[in-house]
Image (cartoon, rainbow, N blue to C red; front, top):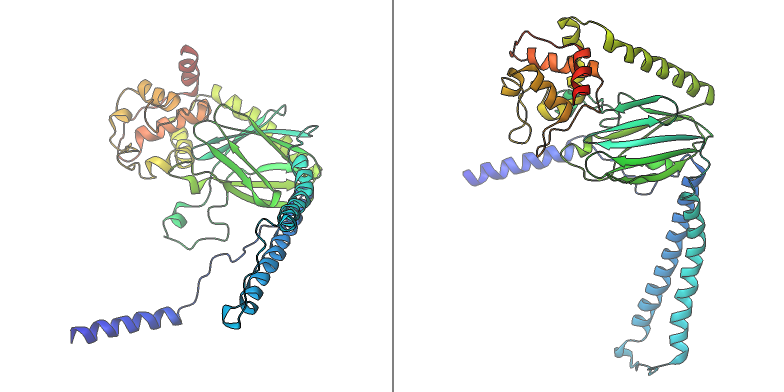
Length: 376
């Protein structure tokens, strides 16, 4: 009876699998053609090499199978003796050499173009952090962090996932079309890699080094990519979004960002209420801290300690600020002093000290953060 029950369960499960609506992943096997001249040249080179390899494979295996079929021992065939044949050795040396040279010439031409990053119209410094990107428009007084914006409810399967799941950010990097853009890549902590397939751009971001690459986008649009190095726990939560716009739209965006940066810099002189800091701190925490310490402040022991009822949070506020600004050596706690403004540091510290039942009742002004940084 138990055997019949188990068999019936197996048949039921098989029937459910066969009748269920299939959910297939992306079936695209080839690289994208891209939206830049270099990306299309790389694609054409890739396809040329691919078909050369197909022809070589067909010829080699065709000759091999034909020889096996028509020179079988059962038909009385006897092996030809051409040991140390000069002619054969010349043929199997010259033919591969010619093929490799034929591949190397266009490949070298493409590589020269890929590495020619001079005379750029715009320079953007890209710094990889665990797990976000920082963009600095050199000479434009614009810089910002770009964080994953996919809702946590989607990540934890509480709601359906959207079309751009794990490929959406709060701040895309905005660039003008038909301009040569040079990216200068480095990293703050571990090795990352900035990769946008449709732009044919991919380069490692290595701490202490600057790598270069460039692109010239011809079509306006949104182009998405990801970190392509295994950089830690949230490696899969480090998307890249490039927003390519016509020149006039890009200039309007740039002007708005510059004005917003000036306004943000003035906020550190404002006297804030605890409620204002708490509300802003909740947003800062969700973007900068929740990935490690969790949205409920309970952390992921032992690597990421909880902040709920934490002695660091419930201790002196100056010590709390110090660990946020300078991090904690020997742990995964990064220094957020270079990453967050004084206003955001004051806000997130205020939020952590009064959220999740901590209820310390205190708060700190941004000007105090400025003084503490200057005293170091």
